[in-house]
Length: 107
Image (tube, rainbow, N blue to C red; front, side, top):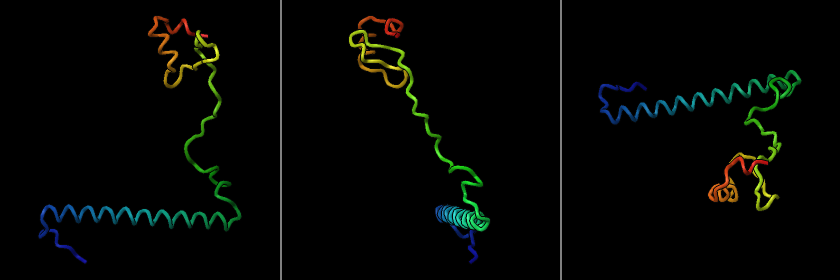
């Protein structure tokens, strides 16, 4: 299936290039899937699991979930605290507008 690119106009040539790039991407994905299947089959044939060879599945690192100690306390309501991370709570912003300084709100 030879295509005579000399007879194509600019739009047709761009269309051909885009189709070729999409096909190239599809072929690469198919090859990766086949290779992954071969590797998994080889690992299973040897009596191992994927995790035994490569460790746990890669992904986003999980956060420890350890809460951060509070750094600021609301003088009007001592039960309200803020670690200094994330969006400022309303009470903190209101205290700053009222003339307090950050150091005044430190625990």
